[in-house]
Structures are given as C-alpha cells and as structure tokens.
Image (cartoon, rainbow, N blue to C red; front, top):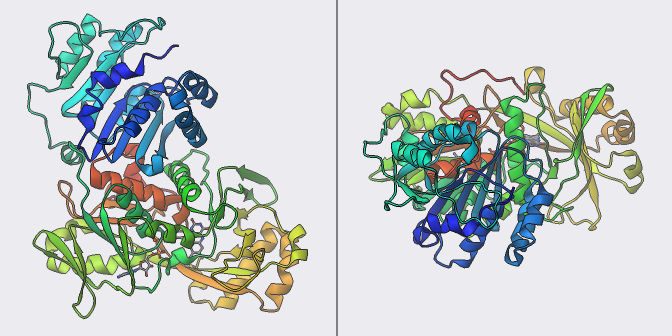
Length: 593
Ligand SMILES: Cc1cc2nc3c(=O)[nH]c(=O)nc-3n(C[C@H](O)[C@H](O)[C@H](O)COP(=O)(O)OP(=O)(O)OC[C@H]3O[C@@H](n4cnc5c(N)ncnc54)[C@H](O)[C@@H]3O)c2cc1C
C-alpha cells in the first residue's frame, strides 16, 4: 500500500508553526505505514530552529514494521536516508507491545506501538497536541469507535489531520467521507470550514471530565522543565537525573558518599539479561522494554568492549537439561554508566551529602543533613536512594501526617546483601572459560577488561566474576568466605569445567570480594512515580531495582520523566501499573525473583 503524502498531514495540523515555543510536542499517529510520516516529521523538526526541545511521536502499527521496507520507502527521499538508517539501527525485536526509541540524543522519542489500534489507544496515558488519523474507507464503522477512543488522548485544542489510505499515489489528501465527518463532530471535533476538510481541532461543546483521570487532566499541556533534587547517585538516581536533564530540567544529585555509584551500582560488572516466563508475565515484558533503553544509553555513552558489550548471554534454565541463548543481552560496568549520566549538561553532583530530613518550606522542598545544615532545595524531589528512602519517608510523615495514608501503599523497601567473587584472569585460563556470560544458578562473566582506574594494569588485563550470593536465610549473617564458597558451589553445578579452572583461586583464598546491598520490594519489581499527590505531585520515587538495576533503571527513569513532564509513557498503562509506587493495595500478586 502506498503511503499518503506526509507533508499534507503536518500542514493539516499547522506544523511547524504550531509547535514553536512549546517545551515539547506530542504527536499521535494512528498508522506507521513504512515510517515515511515519522521520518518526514523528524526531518521537519531538525530543520526548524524554533522547534520544541522534545518531539514525542507515538505511532501504531498492526504488525512489526519491516526494516527493509522502511529503507526502501525512504530511498526515494535523499534527505530522509540518514534518518531512515538511524531508525532502522534501533529497530531490534519489534514484537507486539510498546517500543520506545530515543533518537537525536534523546530529543526525539518515538514510541512505536505494535498491535490492535483500539487496544493500543486504551493503553496510552497522555494528551496529544496533534493527531494524524488514517481513515480507511472500507472499515468506516470501526473508525467510529477509534475516533471515540482517540478523544481520551486529546486535550481541548488538539489538532487533527485526516487522510484515507489510497491505492492512487496521485490522489491528494482525501477528505473524510460524510459519515466520518459526522462522527468526528459527534465526538467533539470541529472544523472551521463548511467545505469537507481534513483539518480539525478538538473542542467539544461539553465540559471535559477531569475527575476520572487526574494524570491526564494535569498532562493536558506538556510541562515546562523545572528544578529537581535527586537523592542517590546510583543507577536509579543518575538515570533519572539524565532523563530530566535531557528534557531541560536543572537537577542536583545528592549522595552521602564521596563519589557516584558508591552503593549497589558500584558493582564492577553486571548482567543485562531479559527475564523469561512461560506466560510472558509483566516482569518479563518490563525487562525487555528496559533492556532496549539501557542498550541505547550504553551505545551512546560507553566504550564498547571496555565498559560494556552486547555479548549475548547463555541462560541455563534447568542445569544440564535446557539452555536459552539471549542475543539482546550482555555485560555492563554500572559505574561507567552512572558517571556518564552525571556528566551531562544540567546536572550538578553533590558528594558527602547525607540527607537526614526533607521538609516543605513555601513552594519548595528543603533537604537538610543531620545537623540541620541545608544541602539543597527545589520544587521537586526524587527519592532514588534505594532502601535509604524508607527512613526519610518515615521521618517526613512526622511533619506531614496527611501523607501517611498514601505512603502506607508504598511496598516496603528493604536491603539484601550480596557478595561477588572475582579474580584476575590468567592468559592460560582463557580457553577453558566461556566466551560469553553464562547465568542460571549464579553466573559467570569472564574476559572483562580491568579498569585502568581500579589498578595499574596492562591494557589487556582481564578479570572473571562469579556469583553473586543473595543473603537470605543462613547467609544473612555469614562471613565473606562462606559467601565465596557458596558462589563456588553454584559455579561447580553451572559450569563444571570453568569451576575446575578457577578452583585453585577459591582453594587458596586468592579470590577478590565485591559486596553490596540490593534494594528489594516484596514483589521484586521497582517502585516509580508520584508519592504525595495525584494532581500536582512534587515528591517522586524511583527505587527497588532489586537484582536487576541494569534492566530496570533507565525504563523507570523514562517513566518518571514522562510522568513529571506530562509526556507519553514508554509503557502500556496496564504494564506501568506494576511499577506504580503506591500499588500495594489491590494489585495482582507477582511471582518472586
Ligand atoms: C552482589 C550484587 C550483584 C548484582 N548483580 C546485578 C546484575 O548482574 N545485573 C543487574 O542488573 N543488577 C545487579 N545487581 C543490582 C544492581 O546493582 C542494583 O539494582 C542497582 O545498582 C541499584 O541502583 P540504585 O541506584 O537503586 O541503588 P544504589 O546504587 O545502592 O544507590 C543508592 C545511593 O543512595 C545513596 N544514599 C542512600 N541514602 C542516602 C541519603 N539519605 N542521603 C544521600 N544519599 C543516600 C547511597 O550512598 C547510594 O549511592 C547486583 C547487586 C548486588 C549487590
């Protein structure tokens, strides 16, 4: 099917003039076709010096778009070819669901939603500034329900341009047929002309209800960037700070430690690997969405091969019986990612800042240390300090008892210690150690370059990492050697040959130790979102990353920034609900780790 001329839709919505001087512009397109409309819009945004800082483009496609078709369609437009290639490079694994693609250094955010249009509309949580609506004539009756569902994603003033899918490439933009025009009017859209028109705006004659969804009422207009203090400079805090800074926010990141990534995120190397379940449960879906976003960040910010690698990961699901190869998976040095995020424009890192109290003064929050010294103040605060958030929230309730009822719905955050065993890899060991990370009962990651800032070593010095322990039951009070022995016992089951190679190191206490504390929730999923209010929140949280901070932290940061800015969410609403910070009441129970 040939794609309707893209510029007519932009003109129909008054672009590019309409998006000028806006902090962000949010487009909803009901059909991806071969991507031409998106590419054309992206190109128009790039060429417009007065365009918004962020362009959100949410687009539906009944099937996963084909990369070859995308490149072929764009081939006749020389000005679009570089953009088409950049888009194609991000198009990994476009299975049904939402796929958030960060383009133009995160200033153009494409949310590609694969599936049934009406179902996808129900999963949106934003108000579009303009809509590109396809009206296939043959399916006119179903369009009626699509238009009705669409109004949930419109604010008063949302512009709408229609087209119809046509096999005639010469056909100008088709005007909506008469019944469709009637339905548009019935649903609250109006047009200025008496002639058939493709240009509409949402302006119903009735009062729009704001009570049913306070988030949508608040997000009617994209928010202007503001100022924010983030507590905690680990994966959660630094990724949240970077997501906000990319959107123009001024962010201070406070940490009790002298350097970033001093908590669990100081892990020397970690695995980024999807969770798999027979019923593809929310945890599995969230892990895939999260990994896509982490990979985009790693590609942009880190040195491939030294700081991270998309090496693939072999998972032993039942030891000796079944294995699963994860191609979109690999290892990352989390501290490198944290450092790169904190170096971004708009972020100021404050070390040695142990926050003891958070208090409201006028229209700002004031953060103080234990001696009452002010550390920072801002309109918004994000708690991203892992299990350290719990005492701060408990303390806050003393001065704001009205928050107690809301905070009671926050799943309890608690710490679980873990010990990782590691050692320098001898050249003669390389052949008997796996070429890629293996996980299952514990994990083994080999051939990892040792950082020059950790120790003076030759550029090709490498290390292996085995573990980690999960200190529940008897391990809670166990000494470090007991943890090493536990890691070695697991390794013997997971990879007997590698265990044999590494056994001398374990036997002679030549194993190095790294230990940290994971922040976990009872259902082993992070907590994200507003804490104090649904209508105009200013206290936020992103914590509880558990054993999978590399899978979840960027996803949580994107969701948080979307909620703070009134933007489209990177996830379907039904999936995001599983991360809701105040979910403890009445949510479905989830499987554990
Ligand atoms: C042994 C081990 C192995 C792991 N392996 C993996 C893996 O393979 N893959 C993976 O994805 N994840 C892994 N994880 C989990 C991962 O490390 C965490 O999920 C992630 O680092 C959590 O990031 P965070 O920012 O939430 O917490 P942290 O990195 O702990 O950051 C919290 C920060 O808050 C600061 N802070 C706390 N309270 C205050 C306060 N009151 N004032 C100021 N600052 C404060 C702390 O100093 C700290 O820097 C592992 C964890 C451990 C312990």
